[in-house]
Figure 1 (cartoon, helix red, strand yellow):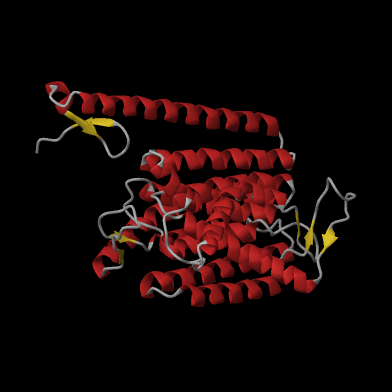
Figure 2: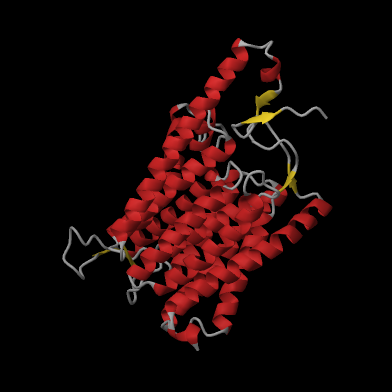
Length: 390
């Protein structure tokens, strides 16, 4: 079969199946959430003003799982060695466990420490099943084929910190409509390219399915969102991204150049690190809720909801393109040039529009009695829109 002989066909099929299934399932999850009252209530820290269903992660998890199951039934995993095949199912089982921990928090509002303990326990089990940082490959510092092999205790600690750290970084990024899903989707696409360039086809299959469910969910989650992914969805995304980045091609040990996933995921990781350091500096718990995340800072700087999300998107895609250069992906410099042009162009356009709108607001303030001016108001999305007379 074509799927059994072409890794690219498997990746495309996994992406399309995950996107299609997620797109179809999420509205049904939303209907059930509204019926049974599983909603996220507004509060001063949050951006939404009406109750929102926060079970979107259910649709994402189902889309991801069904896509991998259908691909397996169609023979898509037939080209993998048995140990690589096992890593896919181990990652799927771990993502399901992390999803359940987050879903329990969505339904029962768990405190942070039980959630953290559950995450660590699952990460330890996943490590014992082979999804581990067993060695670190620094090709520019060490001779080819000579990775730095980690002792098992150090491998366990590094793997647990990696899995739990990225999971919570994505969870904390989920503060605006479409932000976590879009960033995770872009990062997953970057991991597809990097994985295939390093001949890590198992990781590529997982990343393709993850990207599909992210973009399928984004159709319902982009501003203005109709449903939230909840902690179940963000934990699922974070763990799966982290696990994909350490599912490598080596026999017996997983060898990974940590710079590649660090580059792709550096934005949420840097945001999480800055927030934790700020809270600790003030003598607060790392889990203390506040509004010091990157997206909060961009909103306070005057960017609208959508423009804040868009700006973080384009910076993430630039980081993914940079990782492609490090991984020696084909046409890597072309992709980096394109990503750089998109990033610079987006920043310039958004800045100019912000300046124009600021000037228009100043004119409205300076001439409040102007009949023409009184017919317009600043739209919440950051543009000037006609005032409603209804």
